[in-house]
Amino acid sequence: MDIFEFAKSKELAAQEFYRNLAQKVPDTGLSGIFTLLANEEEKHLEIIEKMQAETDIENATTTILSDAQELFDKMRQGSKKFTYDKSELELYKEAQKIEQNARDFYLEKAQQTDKESHRDIFTKLAEEENKHYFLLDNIIEFVSRPEQWLENAEFYHLEEY
Image 1 (tube, rainbow, N blue to C red):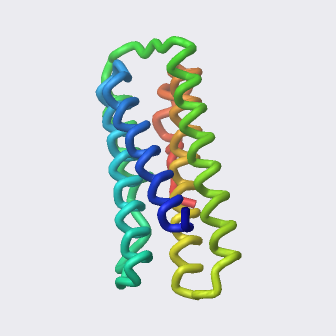
Image 2: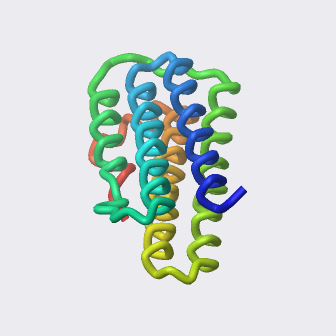
């Protein structure tokens, strides 16, 4: 299997994983965040397909963190109590591991390619996967300690970095 086919299979698997999580999670806010992540993986798939076809790629960066921040803000404004079981937390940690592996894969491929345009895209995809990892880190923190996470309304957990 070549690099592009392998990358596409990873993105498809991640997309499916997030769509399943979005359906399983009991909170609509978190469901929305997982849907955002699934949509991001779909965009990554499209970027890889364009790379494979050697078609121009306009933009490989996204607004996932600011979009997720809006959803967290809505969740914070609600008065709902958040309770989650351990199995959900394990799923979120599994998702985080998927993002970490994808980031490492893209960084490795960026170093291995001779094409500068591919190197740039692989690096940008790695940065995007790192944003997903960071977002999942916030979800894990939110699920583990919702009262503490929510009570600090001035602190924005998802600042762009």
